[in-house]
Amino acid sequence: MILIAILCTPLAISGLFAGALLAIWRRRREAAHAMSWGAAFAAIAVGWLAVLGTTSALHNAPLPGATPSLCWLAAALLLVQGLRQRAGRPNRAAALSAIWTTIALAISLLSDLAPQMRDATPPTIALLTGLGLLLAAFAVGPRRSRKTRNFDWGTTALLGAFAVANLALVVGLYTVDHDSNVAVAFIALGGSVTYVGLGLATVLLLNQDFGVVLERLARTDPLTGVWNRRGFDEAAPHLLARLRTDHRDRAAVAIADIDSFKAINDCYGHTTGDQVLVHFARMLGTAVRPGDLLARLGGEEFVLLAMGVDAIELYQRVEHVRGLVGLPSDEGVSLPSITASFGVAQISPDTLALRDAMERADHALYQAKHEGRNRSVIDNWPQGAMAEEAADTPAS
Image (tube, rainbow, N blue to C red; front, side, top):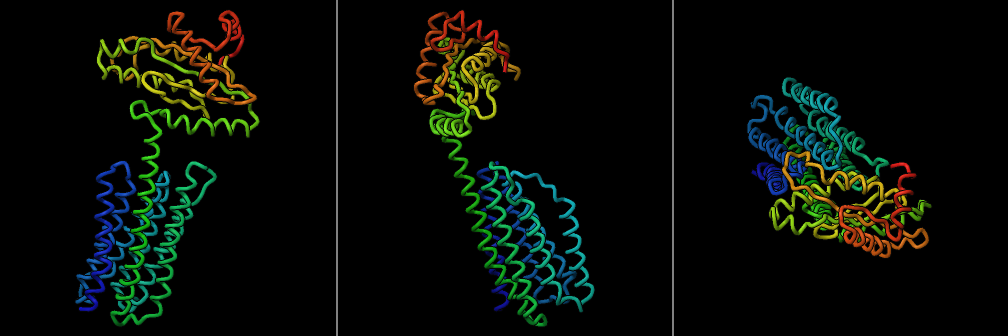
């Protein structure tokens, strides 16, 4: 009875975390790694259920070693798969996983068919699992890409900790008497502690992911997918500071506005108006280069902060966009014909004062509206000189 109670402990723990992780996945289907981790704990639970079912007749049950071993190896592979999904890495270890599983299965079957090898099976399986997780930790380890550095460190630490726990279990298994039920109890208790730590780590990682999603939503316009005003106000100073660090002193800002947008809403409805905004944001996206920042300030007004260019180059970009916005949508949606106006301003290379440049760009936008809409104006730039300068400047 004592052994049965001990075996129920890892079964209950793994079942609890399997249910919690799968519930998280059901609420957030985009978190595919939550499903992988939930399936991993479900496989662990099935493995312990198999051990519990064959404990009273361990030597008489068919292939008693292979069933739980396969379940636990499947759990390790699902754990690795979830970590790779979280880190944004494609799974390129299919061949290694197949070889790893085949070797473990062969050892399990051999121990079932050759009872004299039964004592070596538990530590061998733990050793294979630990080594496999170390290989996985190396596979998802830190890279030079700053984008995934935080994710890589988290996944590597989690894999490394679980691998070390398995390797420590190997040492413990070689020190116990395998002719009694001590080995089974030892694995159950050691596994319970490992599962608690692993389960809490996965839940914490998912909580961190959820925080990242919330932070991104707080800074992103939900309709168009570009930055909102809050995101722009927070990101723009960092981009300009990096511009100064990189010893580049050129930057420009453009403010864009859809002409007569209120009339579109009144005539066609707000649903069509939203589709127009999405279309306009997509067209503005064609003017964005790496390092630039596009945001929706509110309503039908957008801002584009272009780094490393002057006002003339940005003027050419928005003129290209102005020619695109009136074209039919390529997504099969019938939209009313629209036009847009743009105001462009150079950011002072001495001060890199964004607010001053945005005020001047807004003044240029007002001038474009006053002159009849459907045009681009550079702040304080004579129209004739602007056209001549833009014609002499090669397109970016």
